[in-house]
Image (cartoon, rainbow, N blue to C red; front, side, top):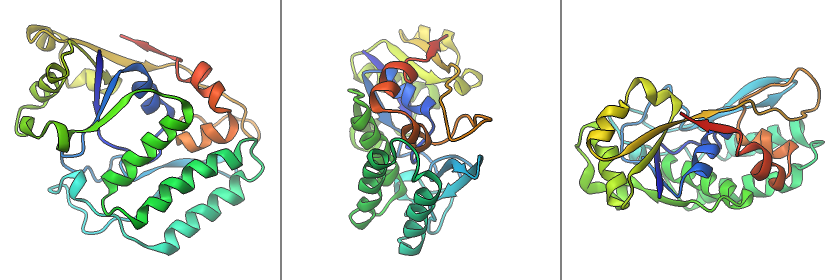
Length: 236
């Protein structure tokens, strides 16, 4: 079994889904501190041929709060505006209807949940279901609360062990934080996932890479994404 642990991001870029695709168990790291300049509540979409950010408004944001303690603002105006933005910029995309069905199902959940961790995790799980990713998703706050307080690397090692696994995969950025030697000493084989070049036809050139998975879904069928784009990575 291969395990990954990652903060929940809202409609993240395809590299996030490649990580989910590469493992058997994906743990949302929802009980760690919120990062203000991170990607938990924002990403980029295509607007007039260029990358343009969207950000779900939050309330009482603090890096001293955990992600699962950070509430999003229930501003109907923002959600309606985001829906309209997607319509005006993607209505002629080949898979607009299919993509909007997934997106709107996630946004509808705002009426039943309060925290950005819940909305973000739902976006990942709903998209994964649409793409046919069969990974099992869990929350660290629910399944692994006993590991809270451990040093960063040791907590990841312990979560991996609790799953009866000796294989842990981390995003490439973690190569500066985690040592393969340290993991090996604990009996865990650590690998880093490196996204390959992912290109597809948008409305026009030049191609704008690494946008939200929303953009990928607008221009590619679920089958194409699963069979051609998700496997475009390497483990190092």
